[in-house]
Image (tube, rainbow, N blue to C red; front, side, top):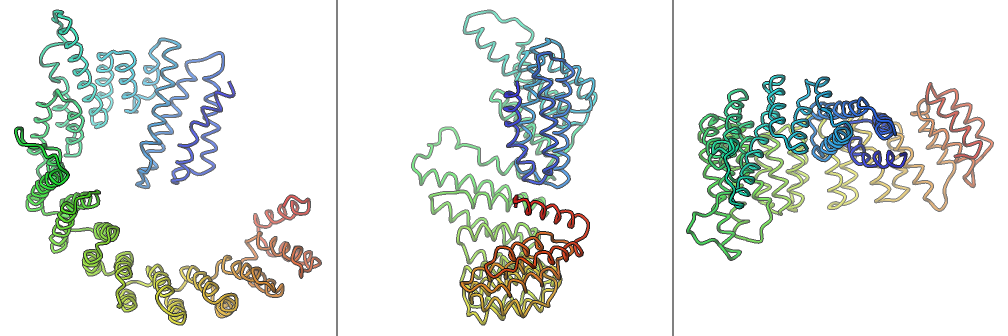
Length: 576
Protein backbone atom coordinates (compact mmCIF):
# COMPACT_ATOMS: atom_id res chain seq x y z
CA UNK A 1 0.00 0.00 0.00
CA UNK A 2 2.86 2.40 0.84
CA UNK A 3 4.26 1.95 -2.66
CA UNK A 4 0.90 2.85 -4.25
CA UNK A 5 0.57 5.96 -2.08
CA UNK A 6 4.15 6.99 -2.90
CA UNK A 7 3.51 6.48 -6.61
CA UNK A 8 0.35 8.60 -6.51
CA UNK A 9 2.13 11.39 -4.63
CA UNK A 10 5.00 11.30 -7.14
CA UNK A 11 2.44 11.62 -9.95
CA UNK A 12 1.34 14.90 -8.37
CA UNK A 13 4.84 16.36 -8.04
CA UNK A 14 5.12 17.90 -11.55
CA UNK A 15 1.95 19.96 -11.10
CA UNK A 16 2.95 20.96 -7.54
CA UNK A 17 6.42 22.00 -8.73
CA UNK A 18 4.76 24.10 -11.44
CA UNK A 19 2.51 25.77 -8.85
CA UNK A 20 5.57 26.71 -6.80
CA UNK A 21 7.65 27.71 -9.84
CA UNK A 22 5.05 30.14 -11.16
CA UNK A 23 4.56 31.66 -7.70
CA UNK A 24 0.98 30.58 -6.94
CA UNK A 25 2.06 28.65 -3.80
CA UNK A 26 5.01 28.93 -1.46
CA UNK A 27 7.36 26.03 -0.70
CA UNK A 28 5.78 25.64 2.75
CA UNK A 29 2.30 25.46 1.21
CA UNK A 30 3.43 22.79 -1.28
CA UNK A 31 4.80 20.70 1.60
CA UNK A 32 1.46 21.05 3.41
CA UNK A 33 -0.42 19.94 0.27
CA UNK A 34 1.82 16.87 -0.07
CA UNK A 35 1.25 15.93 3.58
CA UNK A 36 -2.53 16.36 3.29
CA UNK A 37 -2.64 14.42 0.01
CA UNK A 38 -0.63 11.57 1.58
CA UNK A 39 -3.13 11.36 4.47
CA UNK A 40 -6.10 11.35 2.08
CA UNK A 41 -4.49 8.73 -0.19
CA UNK A 42 -3.84 6.48 2.81
CA UNK A 43 -7.50 6.57 3.79
CA UNK A 44 -8.75 5.51 0.35
CA UNK A 45 -6.07 2.82 -0.05
CA UNK A 46 -6.50 0.98 3.27
CA UNK A 47 -8.30 -2.32 3.53
CA UNK A 48 -11.48 -1.02 5.18
CA UNK A 49 -12.92 1.73 2.99
CA UNK A 50 -15.47 4.38 3.95
CA UNK A 51 -17.51 6.44 1.52
CA UNK A 52 -16.88 9.58 3.60
CA UNK A 53 -13.11 9.30 2.97
CA UNK A 54 -13.67 9.45 -0.78
CA UNK A 55 -15.99 12.43 -0.38
CA UNK A 56 -13.42 14.22 1.82
CA UNK A 57 -10.73 13.53 -0.78
CA UNK A 58 -12.81 15.03 -3.57
CA UNK A 59 -13.85 17.96 -1.37
CA UNK A 60 -10.18 18.76 -0.67
CA UNK A 61 -9.25 18.59 -4.38
CA UNK A 62 -12.16 20.86 -5.35
CA UNK A 63 -11.18 23.37 -2.65
CA UNK A 64 -7.59 23.27 -3.94
CA UNK A 65 -8.79 23.81 -7.50
CA UNK A 66 -10.85 26.83 -6.45
CA UNK A 67 -7.93 28.27 -4.49
CA UNK A 68 -5.67 27.97 -7.54
CA UNK A 69 -8.29 29.71 -9.69
CA UNK A 70 -8.73 32.54 -7.14
CA UNK A 71 -4.99 33.14 -6.99
CA UNK A 72 -4.69 33.10 -10.78
CA UNK A 73 -7.49 35.69 -10.99
CA UNK A 74 -5.85 37.86 -8.34
CA UNK A 75 -2.47 38.07 -10.10
CA UNK A 76 -3.82 37.72 -13.66
CA UNK A 77 -1.59 34.72 -14.48
CA UNK A 78 -2.81 31.82 -16.63
CA UNK A 79 0.48 30.05 -17.53
CA UNK A 80 0.24 26.22 -17.47
CA UNK A 81 -3.47 26.54 -16.58
CA UNK A 82 -4.74 23.54 -18.54
CA UNK A 83 -1.81 21.35 -17.58
CA UNK A 84 -2.23 21.90 -13.83
CA UNK A 85 -6.00 22.20 -13.44
CA UNK A 86 -6.83 19.32 -15.80
CA UNK A 87 -4.69 16.89 -13.82
CA UNK A 88 -6.70 17.76 -10.68
CA UNK A 89 -10.02 17.27 -12.51
CA UNK A 90 -8.87 13.89 -13.86
CA UNK A 91 -7.81 12.83 -10.38
CA UNK A 92 -11.24 13.76 -8.96
CA UNK A 93 -12.97 11.80 -11.72
CA UNK A 94 -10.77 8.79 -10.96
CA UNK A 95 -11.66 8.88 -7.28
CA UNK A 96 -15.37 9.07 -8.12
CA UNK A 97 -15.10 6.11 -10.47
CA UNK A 98 -13.48 4.02 -7.72
CA UNK A 99 -16.15 5.05 -5.22
CA UNK A 100 -19.04 4.35 -7.57
CA UNK A 101 -17.57 0.97 -8.49
CA UNK A 102 -17.29 0.09 -4.79
CA UNK A 103 -20.72 1.11 -3.51
CA UNK A 104 -22.93 1.39 -6.62
CA UNK A 105 -24.53 4.40 -4.95
CA UNK A 106 -25.03 8.00 -5.95
CA UNK A 107 -21.71 9.28 -4.62
CA UNK A 108 -22.13 12.51 -6.56
CA UNK A 109 -25.47 13.10 -4.85
CA UNK A 110 -23.73 12.99 -1.48
CA UNK A 111 -21.14 15.49 -2.71
CA UNK A 112 -23.71 17.76 -4.33
CA UNK A 113 -25.64 17.90 -1.07
CA UNK A 114 -22.52 19.41 0.50
CA UNK A 115 -21.31 21.47 -2.46
CA UNK A 116 -24.37 22.57 -4.39
CA UNK A 117 -22.67 25.97 -4.77
CA UNK A 118 -19.86 24.56 -6.96
CA UNK A 119 -20.73 24.43 -10.69
CA UNK A 120 -17.62 22.39 -11.49
CA UNK A 121 -18.94 19.53 -9.38
CA UNK A 122 -22.34 19.56 -11.12
CA UNK A 123 -20.56 19.38 -14.49
CA UNK A 124 -18.41 16.48 -13.30
CA UNK A 125 -21.48 14.64 -12.04
CA UNK A 126 -23.35 15.14 -15.31
CA UNK A 127 -20.35 13.97 -17.37
CA UNK A 128 -20.09 10.88 -15.20
CA UNK A 129 -23.78 10.08 -15.77
CA UNK A 130 -23.39 10.67 -19.51
CA UNK A 131 -20.07 8.95 -20.15
CA UNK A 132 -19.78 6.28 -17.46
CA UNK A 133 -23.37 5.34 -16.80
CA UNK A 134 -24.51 6.13 -20.37
CA UNK A 135 -27.54 7.95 -18.99
CA UNK A 136 -28.29 11.10 -20.97
CA UNK A 137 -31.53 11.64 -19.06
CA UNK A 138 -29.76 11.62 -15.68
CA UNK A 139 -27.14 14.01 -17.01
CA UNK A 140 -29.87 16.31 -18.31
CA UNK A 141 -31.65 16.31 -14.94
CA UNK A 142 -28.39 17.18 -13.17
CA UNK A 143 -27.79 20.12 -15.50
CA UNK A 144 -31.34 21.37 -14.94
CA UNK A 145 -30.93 21.12 -11.17
CA UNK A 146 -27.56 22.87 -11.39
CA UNK A 147 -29.07 25.75 -13.34
CA UNK A 148 -31.65 26.25 -10.61
CA UNK A 149 -28.75 26.85 -8.20
CA UNK A 150 -26.66 28.79 -10.76
CA UNK A 151 -29.04 30.42 -13.27
CA UNK A 152 -26.33 32.73 -14.67
CA UNK A 153 -23.38 30.32 -14.88
CA UNK A 154 -21.95 30.44 -18.43
CA UNK A 155 -19.88 27.29 -17.93
CA UNK A 156 -22.96 25.24 -16.99
CA UNK A 157 -24.85 26.39 -20.06
CA UNK A 158 -21.90 25.61 -22.33
CA UNK A 159 -21.46 22.10 -20.99
CA UNK A 160 -25.21 21.42 -21.05
CA UNK A 161 -25.29 22.63 -24.67
CA UNK A 162 -22.35 20.37 -25.52
CA UNK A 163 -24.00 17.39 -23.79
CA UNK A 164 -27.21 17.72 -25.81
CA UNK A 165 -25.25 17.90 -29.06
CA UNK A 166 -23.28 14.80 -28.06
CA UNK A 167 -26.53 13.06 -27.22
CA UNK A 168 -28.01 13.95 -30.62
CA UNK A 169 -24.84 12.72 -32.36
CA UNK A 170 -25.01 9.44 -30.45
CA UNK A 171 -28.68 8.95 -31.43
CA UNK A 172 -27.88 9.66 -35.08
CA UNK A 173 -25.20 6.96 -35.05
CA UNK A 174 -27.56 4.50 -33.36
CA UNK A 175 -30.24 5.19 -35.96
CA UNK A 176 -27.72 4.65 -38.78
CA UNK A 177 -26.79 1.27 -37.31
CA UNK A 178 -30.44 0.25 -37.06
CA UNK A 179 -31.07 1.32 -40.65
CA UNK A 180 -28.03 -0.63 -41.87
CA UNK A 181 -29.48 -3.69 -40.15
CA UNK A 182 -32.84 -3.02 -41.88
CA UNK A 183 -34.58 -2.63 -38.53
CA UNK A 184 -37.64 -0.41 -38.07
CA UNK A 185 -36.98 2.60 -35.86
CA UNK A 186 -40.02 4.05 -34.15
CA UNK A 187 -38.61 5.57 -31.01
CA UNK A 188 -39.49 9.10 -29.84
CA UNK A 189 -35.78 9.85 -29.28
CA UNK A 190 -35.22 9.42 -33.00
CA UNK A 191 -37.56 12.21 -34.01
CA UNK A 192 -36.21 14.59 -36.64
CA UNK A 193 -36.11 17.56 -34.22
CA UNK A 194 -34.02 15.72 -31.62
CA UNK A 195 -31.67 14.31 -34.27
CA UNK A 196 -31.10 17.82 -35.64
CA UNK A 197 -30.16 19.09 -32.15
CA UNK A 198 -33.41 20.86 -31.25
CA UNK A 199 -32.76 20.35 -27.51
CA UNK A 200 -29.37 22.02 -27.89
CA UNK A 201 -31.06 24.86 -29.81
CA UNK A 202 -33.49 25.43 -26.92
CA UNK A 203 -30.56 25.64 -24.49
CA UNK A 204 -28.82 28.09 -26.83
CA UNK A 205 -31.88 30.35 -27.06
CA UNK A 206 -32.46 30.31 -23.29
CA UNK A 207 -28.83 30.89 -22.41
CA UNK A 208 -28.22 33.89 -24.70
CA UNK A 209 -31.35 35.55 -23.30
CA UNK A 210 -29.75 35.33 -19.84
CA UNK A 211 -26.01 35.67 -20.48
CA UNK A 212 -25.25 38.67 -22.64
CA UNK A 213 -22.13 39.41 -24.63
CA UNK A 214 -20.38 38.25 -27.77
CA UNK A 215 -17.80 36.17 -25.90
CA UNK A 216 -20.40 33.71 -24.59
CA UNK A 217 -22.17 33.69 -27.95
CA UNK A 218 -18.93 32.83 -29.77
CA UNK A 219 -18.14 30.07 -27.25
CA UNK A 220 -21.45 28.34 -28.05
CA UNK A 221 -20.79 28.70 -31.77
CA UNK A 222 -17.34 27.13 -31.32
CA UNK A 223 -18.95 24.13 -29.57
CA UNK A 224 -21.62 23.77 -32.27
CA UNK A 225 -18.93 23.76 -34.98
CA UNK A 226 -17.54 20.54 -33.52
CA UNK A 227 -20.65 18.71 -34.77
CA UNK A 228 -21.01 18.32 -38.53
CA UNK A 229 -24.75 17.53 -38.37
CA UNK A 230 -25.51 20.90 -36.70
CA UNK A 231 -24.98 23.13 -39.76
CA UNK A 232 -28.40 24.78 -39.45
CA UNK A 233 -27.82 25.50 -35.77
CA UNK A 234 -24.35 26.90 -36.53
CA UNK A 235 -25.82 29.26 -39.12
CA UNK A 236 -28.54 30.41 -36.74
CA UNK A 237 -26.02 31.16 -33.98
CA UNK A 238 -23.69 32.91 -36.44
CA UNK A 239 -26.50 35.09 -37.83
CA UNK A 240 -27.68 35.97 -34.32
CA UNK A 241 -24.12 36.89 -33.35
CA UNK A 242 -23.95 39.45 -36.14
CA UNK A 243 -27.41 40.81 -35.35
CA UNK A 244 -27.18 40.99 -31.56
CA UNK A 245 -23.54 41.99 -31.09
CA UNK A 246 -22.62 44.17 -34.03
CA UNK A 247 -21.09 46.75 -31.64
CA UNK A 248 -18.73 44.25 -30.02
CA UNK A 249 -15.16 43.99 -31.43
CA UNK A 250 -15.18 40.25 -30.68
CA UNK A 251 -18.00 39.76 -33.19
CA UNK A 252 -16.09 41.48 -35.97
CA UNK A 253 -12.92 39.62 -35.00
CA UNK A 254 -14.73 36.29 -35.24
CA UNK A 255 -16.40 37.15 -38.55
CA UNK A 256 -13.07 38.28 -40.04
CA UNK A 257 -11.12 35.22 -38.90
CA UNK A 258 -13.85 32.95 -40.23
CA UNK A 259 -12.77 33.91 -43.75
CA UNK A 260 -9.62 31.83 -43.22
CA UNK A 261 -11.74 28.69 -42.84
CA UNK A 262 -13.98 29.23 -45.86
CA UNK A 263 -12.84 26.99 -48.70
CA UNK A 264 -12.95 27.84 -52.40
CA UNK A 265 -16.41 27.69 -53.98
CA UNK A 266 -17.59 24.27 -55.14
CA UNK A 267 -16.59 23.75 -58.74
CA UNK A 268 -13.50 25.95 -58.50
CA UNK A 269 -10.24 24.17 -59.10
CA UNK A 270 -8.39 23.58 -55.83
CA UNK A 271 -4.79 24.89 -55.73
CA UNK A 272 -2.17 22.15 -56.05
CA UNK A 273 1.24 23.82 -56.39
CA UNK A 274 2.93 25.57 -53.45
CA UNK A 275 2.71 28.88 -55.26
CA UNK A 276 -1.02 28.45 -55.97
CA UNK A 277 -1.65 27.49 -52.33
CA UNK A 278 0.22 30.59 -51.16
CA UNK A 279 -1.87 32.76 -53.48
CA UNK A 280 -5.06 31.16 -52.11
CA UNK A 281 -3.94 31.80 -48.51
CA UNK A 282 -3.16 35.37 -49.51
CA UNK A 283 -6.69 35.79 -50.89
CA UNK A 284 -8.22 34.48 -47.67
CA UNK A 285 -6.12 36.87 -45.63
CA UNK A 286 -7.17 39.75 -47.91
CA UNK A 287 -10.81 38.85 -47.28
CA UNK A 288 -10.13 38.85 -43.52
CA UNK A 289 -8.56 42.30 -43.76
CA UNK A 290 -11.51 43.58 -45.81
CA UNK A 291 -13.78 42.63 -42.91
CA UNK A 292 -11.42 44.28 -40.42
CA UNK A 293 -11.33 47.44 -42.55
CA UNK A 294 -15.11 47.57 -42.45
CA UNK A 295 -15.00 46.88 -38.72
CA UNK A 296 -12.66 49.77 -37.84
CA UNK A 297 -14.86 52.14 -39.86
CA UNK A 298 -18.03 50.92 -38.12
CA UNK A 299 -16.39 50.63 -34.70
CA UNK A 300 -13.37 52.99 -34.59
CA UNK A 301 -12.18 52.05 -31.09
CA UNK A 302 -8.86 50.99 -29.57
CA UNK A 303 -10.31 47.54 -28.84
CA UNK A 304 -11.30 47.04 -32.49
CA UNK A 305 -7.92 48.18 -33.78
CA UNK A 306 -6.27 45.85 -31.28
CA UNK A 307 -8.12 42.90 -32.86
CA UNK A 308 -7.03 44.01 -36.35
CA UNK A 309 -3.36 44.55 -35.47
CA UNK A 310 -3.25 41.31 -33.48
CA UNK A 311 -4.54 39.39 -36.50
CA UNK A 312 -1.98 41.05 -38.80
CA UNK A 313 0.83 40.23 -36.38
CA UNK A 314 -0.27 36.60 -36.04
CA UNK A 315 -0.23 36.17 -39.81
CA UNK A 316 3.05 38.10 -40.12
CA UNK A 317 4.83 35.83 -37.61
CA UNK A 318 3.41 32.65 -39.19
CA UNK A 319 6.14 30.74 -41.01
CA UNK A 320 5.97 30.58 -44.80
CA UNK A 321 8.37 29.63 -47.57
CA UNK A 322 6.54 31.93 -49.95
CA UNK A 323 8.28 35.27 -50.45
CA UNK A 324 5.07 36.58 -51.99
CA UNK A 325 3.07 35.74 -48.85
CA UNK A 326 5.72 37.10 -46.47
CA UNK A 327 5.83 40.37 -48.41
CA UNK A 328 2.03 40.73 -48.42
CA UNK A 329 1.84 40.08 -44.69
CA UNK A 330 4.49 42.69 -43.94
CA UNK A 331 2.75 45.22 -46.17
CA UNK A 332 -0.65 44.61 -44.53
CA UNK A 333 0.83 44.83 -41.03
CA UNK A 334 2.56 48.14 -41.69
CA UNK A 335 -0.44 49.63 -43.51
CA UNK A 336 -2.83 48.80 -40.66
CA UNK A 337 -0.28 50.07 -38.11
CA UNK A 338 0.08 53.43 -39.88
CA UNK A 339 -3.67 53.95 -39.94
CA UNK A 340 -4.08 53.05 -36.28
CA UNK A 341 -1.10 55.21 -35.25
CA UNK A 342 -2.48 58.20 -37.12
CA UNK A 343 -5.75 57.81 -35.21
CA UNK A 344 -3.84 57.27 -31.92
CA UNK A 345 -5.83 54.09 -31.30
CA UNK A 346 -3.06 51.64 -30.37
CA UNK A 347 -1.86 50.81 -26.87
CA UNK A 348 1.78 51.01 -25.86
CA UNK A 349 1.82 47.22 -25.57
CA UNK A 350 0.97 46.82 -29.24
CA UNK A 351 3.77 49.13 -30.34
CA UNK A 352 6.14 46.97 -28.31
CA UNK A 353 4.79 43.70 -29.76
CA UNK A 354 5.12 45.03 -33.28
CA UNK A 355 8.70 46.26 -32.78
CA UNK A 356 9.80 42.95 -31.26
CA UNK A 357 8.18 40.94 -34.08
CA UNK A 358 9.78 43.11 -36.77
CA UNK A 359 13.17 42.84 -35.05
CA UNK A 360 12.90 39.05 -34.85
CA UNK A 361 12.39 38.94 -38.61
CA UNK A 362 15.18 41.50 -39.24
CA UNK A 363 12.90 44.17 -40.72
CA UNK A 364 14.98 46.93 -39.16
CA UNK A 365 13.65 49.84 -41.23
CA UNK A 366 10.04 49.01 -40.38
CA UNK A 367 10.94 48.37 -36.72
CA UNK A 368 12.55 51.81 -36.53
CA UNK A 369 9.45 53.42 -38.04
CA UNK A 370 7.26 51.87 -35.33
CA UNK A 371 9.80 52.71 -32.59
CA UNK A 372 10.02 56.36 -33.63
CA UNK A 373 6.22 56.57 -33.67
CA UNK A 374 6.04 54.87 -30.29
CA UNK A 375 8.50 57.20 -28.54
CA UNK A 376 6.68 60.21 -29.95
CA UNK A 377 3.42 58.98 -28.46
CA UNK A 378 4.79 57.48 -25.21
CA UNK A 379 7.68 59.81 -24.39
CA UNK A 380 7.75 58.84 -20.71
CA UNK A 381 8.02 55.08 -21.35
CA UNK A 382 11.45 53.68 -20.55
CA UNK A 383 10.66 50.39 -22.30
CA UNK A 384 9.70 52.18 -25.50
CA UNK A 385 12.98 54.11 -25.56
CA UNK A 386 14.88 50.90 -24.84
CA UNK A 387 13.27 49.22 -27.83
CA UNK A 388 14.06 52.19 -30.05
CA UNK A 389 17.70 52.04 -28.93
CA UNK A 390 17.78 48.29 -29.52
CA UNK A 391 16.61 48.88 -33.09
CA UNK A 392 19.28 51.55 -33.63
CA UNK A 393 22.00 49.35 -32.14
CA UNK A 394 21.03 46.44 -34.41
CA UNK A 395 20.94 48.91 -37.32
CA UNK A 396 24.46 50.10 -36.39
CA UNK A 397 23.27 53.70 -36.31
CA UNK A 398 25.94 56.40 -35.71
CA UNK A 399 23.49 58.40 -33.52
CA UNK A 400 23.12 56.00 -30.61
CA UNK A 401 24.91 58.04 -27.94
CA UNK A 402 22.89 61.11 -28.91
CA UNK A 403 19.64 59.14 -28.64
CA UNK A 404 20.54 57.91 -25.14
CA UNK A 405 20.95 61.54 -24.14
CA UNK A 406 17.62 62.41 -25.74
CA UNK A 407 15.86 59.61 -23.85
CA UNK A 408 17.07 60.89 -20.47
CA UNK A 409 15.59 64.31 -21.25
CA UNK A 410 12.10 62.80 -21.51
CA UNK A 411 12.27 60.09 -18.83
CA UNK A 412 11.91 60.30 -15.05
CA UNK A 413 15.15 59.34 -13.26
CA UNK A 414 13.53 56.38 -11.50
CA UNK A 415 12.92 54.53 -14.79
CA UNK A 416 16.33 55.22 -16.33
CA UNK A 417 18.47 52.45 -14.80
CA UNK A 418 17.90 49.88 -17.62
CA UNK A 419 18.83 52.54 -20.18
CA UNK A 420 22.07 53.43 -18.40
CA UNK A 421 22.99 49.74 -18.27
CA UNK A 422 22.16 49.34 -21.96
CA UNK A 423 24.31 52.36 -22.80
CA UNK A 424 27.25 50.98 -20.83
CA UNK A 425 26.91 47.51 -22.44
CA UNK A 426 26.69 49.03 -25.91
CA UNK A 427 29.69 51.28 -25.21
CA UNK A 428 31.76 48.31 -24.00
CA UNK A 429 31.20 46.58 -27.35
CA UNK A 430 31.47 49.63 -29.61
CA UNK A 431 33.54 52.30 -27.89
CA UNK A 432 36.81 52.76 -26.01
CA UNK A 433 37.45 51.96 -22.35
CA UNK A 434 37.53 55.69 -21.56
CA UNK A 435 34.12 56.23 -23.21
CA UNK A 436 32.57 53.36 -21.27
CA UNK A 437 33.94 54.56 -17.96
CA UNK A 438 32.60 58.02 -18.73
CA UNK A 439 29.13 56.47 -19.19
CA UNK A 440 29.38 54.71 -15.81
CA UNK A 441 30.50 57.89 -14.06
CA UNK A 442 27.73 59.91 -15.69
CA UNK A 443 25.21 57.22 -14.70
CA UNK A 444 26.33 57.25 -11.06
CA UNK A 445 25.70 60.99 -10.89
CA UNK A 446 22.18 60.53 -12.29
CA UNK A 447 21.05 57.31 -10.58
CA UNK A 448 20.55 57.47 -6.84
CA UNK A 449 19.18 55.30 -4.06
CA UNK A 450 18.59 51.57 -4.42
CA UNK A 451 19.04 51.65 -8.22
CA UNK A 452 22.62 52.82 -7.79
CA UNK A 453 23.46 49.51 -6.04
CA UNK A 454 22.95 47.59 -9.29
CA UNK A 455 24.96 50.20 -11.21
CA UNK A 456 27.93 49.97 -8.82
CA UNK A 457 28.02 46.18 -9.17
CA UNK A 458 27.93 46.51 -12.98
CA UNK A 459 30.70 49.13 -12.88
CA UNK A 460 32.89 46.88 -10.71
CA UNK A 461 32.31 43.85 -12.97
CA UNK A 462 33.18 45.91 -16.06
CA UNK A 463 36.36 47.24 -14.40
CA UNK A 464 37.62 43.74 -13.61
CA UNK A 465 36.62 42.44 -17.04
CA UNK A 466 38.29 45.27 -18.95
CA UNK A 467 41.26 46.24 -16.77
CA UNK A 468 41.88 43.38 -14.37
CA UNK A 469 42.33 43.53 -10.61
CA UNK A 470 44.16 46.87 -10.52
CA UNK A 471 41.34 48.63 -12.35
CA UNK A 472 38.69 46.91 -10.20
CA UNK A 473 40.45 47.99 -6.99
CA UNK A 474 40.67 51.56 -8.25
CA UNK A 475 36.90 51.59 -8.96
CA UNK A 476 36.23 49.99 -5.57
CA UNK A 477 38.30 52.68 -3.83
CA UNK A 478 36.44 55.42 -5.69
CA UNK A 479 33.07 54.02 -4.60
CA UNK A 480 33.80 52.65 -1.12
CA UNK A 481 32.15 55.57 0.67
CA UNK A 482 29.28 56.01 -1.83
CA UNK A 483 26.37 54.32 -0.09
CA UNK A 484 24.15 52.34 -0.52
CA UNK A 485 25.90 49.05 -1.31
CA UNK A 486 25.00 45.39 -1.62
CA UNK A 487 26.90 42.57 0.13
CA UNK A 488 27.71 41.35 -3.37
CA UNK A 489 29.74 44.51 -4.05
CA UNK A 490 32.23 43.53 -1.32
CA UNK A 491 32.12 39.81 -2.04
CA UNK A 492 33.10 40.53 -5.65
CA UNK A 493 36.29 42.26 -4.46
CA UNK A 494 37.07 39.41 -2.08
CA UNK A 495 36.70 36.95 -4.97
CA UNK A 496 38.79 39.12 -7.32
CA UNK A 497 41.55 39.25 -4.69
CA UNK A 498 41.51 35.48 -4.20
CA UNK A 499 41.89 34.93 -7.96
CA UNK A 500 45.26 36.74 -7.95
CA UNK A 501 48.50 34.76 -7.88
CA UNK A 502 49.80 36.87 -4.98
CA UNK A 503 46.61 37.04 -2.93
CA UNK A 504 46.94 39.74 -0.26
CA UNK A 505 45.32 38.75 3.05
CA UNK A 506 45.44 42.35 4.25
CA UNK A 507 43.21 43.37 1.33
CA UNK A 508 40.78 40.52 2.06
CA UNK A 509 40.52 41.72 5.68
CA UNK A 510 39.90 45.27 4.45
CA UNK A 511 37.03 44.10 2.23
CA UNK A 512 35.47 42.03 5.01
CA UNK A 513 35.78 44.88 7.49
CA UNK A 514 34.12 47.33 5.09
CA UNK A 515 31.36 44.81 4.37
CA UNK A 516 30.76 44.19 8.09
CA UNK A 517 30.54 47.93 8.69
CA UNK A 518 27.51 47.94 6.36
CA UNK A 519 25.95 44.50 6.96
CA UNK A 520 27.47 43.17 10.18
CA UNK A 521 24.26 43.44 12.18
CA UNK A 522 22.22 41.22 9.84
CA UNK A 523 24.49 38.95 7.76
CA UNK A 524 25.69 35.97 9.80
CA UNK A 525 27.32 34.38 6.72
CA UNK A 526 29.73 37.30 6.38
CA UNK A 527 31.09 36.69 9.90
CA UNK A 528 31.39 32.95 9.33
CA UNK A 529 33.19 33.42 6.00
CA UNK A 530 35.59 35.94 7.60
CA UNK A 531 36.50 33.39 10.27
CA UNK A 532 36.98 30.66 7.63
CA UNK A 533 39.36 32.92 5.69
CA UNK A 534 41.51 33.41 8.81
CA UNK A 535 41.48 29.66 9.43
CA UNK A 536 42.10 28.43 5.88
CA UNK A 537 44.15 31.11 4.10
CA UNK A 538 47.92 30.45 4.06
CA UNK A 539 48.47 33.96 5.47
CA UNK A 540 45.44 33.86 7.78
CA UNK A 541 45.61 34.28 11.55
CA UNK A 542 43.50 31.62 13.29
CA UNK A 543 44.06 33.42 16.59
CA UNK A 544 41.84 36.26 15.26
CA UNK A 545 38.78 33.99 15.14
CA UNK A 546 37.91 34.38 18.81
CA UNK A 547 37.84 38.15 18.54
CA UNK A 548 35.76 37.98 15.31
CA UNK A 549 33.31 35.63 17.07
CA UNK A 550 32.73 38.01 20.00
CA UNK A 551 32.41 41.00 17.69
CA UNK A 552 29.75 39.06 15.75
CA UNK A 553 27.83 38.24 18.92
CA UNK A 554 27.76 41.93 19.84
CA UNK A 555 26.63 43.15 16.40
CA UNK A 556 24.19 40.49 15.19
CA UNK A 557 20.56 40.89 16.22
CA UNK A 558 17.73 38.40 16.88
CA UNK A 559 17.45 35.51 14.42
CA UNK A 560 20.73 36.47 12.73
CA UNK A 561 22.58 35.92 16.02
CA UNK A 562 20.86 32.56 16.54
CA UNK A 563 21.75 31.48 13.01
CA UNK A 564 25.37 32.47 13.57
CA UNK A 565 25.63 30.48 16.82
CA UNK A 566 24.13 27.40 15.11
CA UNK A 567 26.47 27.64 12.11
CA UNK A 568 29.47 28.16 14.35
CA UNK A 569 28.56 25.12 16.45
CA UNK A 570 28.23 22.98 13.30
CA UNK A 571 31.57 24.22 12.06
CA UNK A 572 33.21 23.37 15.37
CA UNK A 573 31.91 19.79 15.11
CA UNK A 574 33.10 19.49 11.50
CA UNK A 575 29.71 19.60 9.76
CA UNK A 576 30.40 22.74 7.74
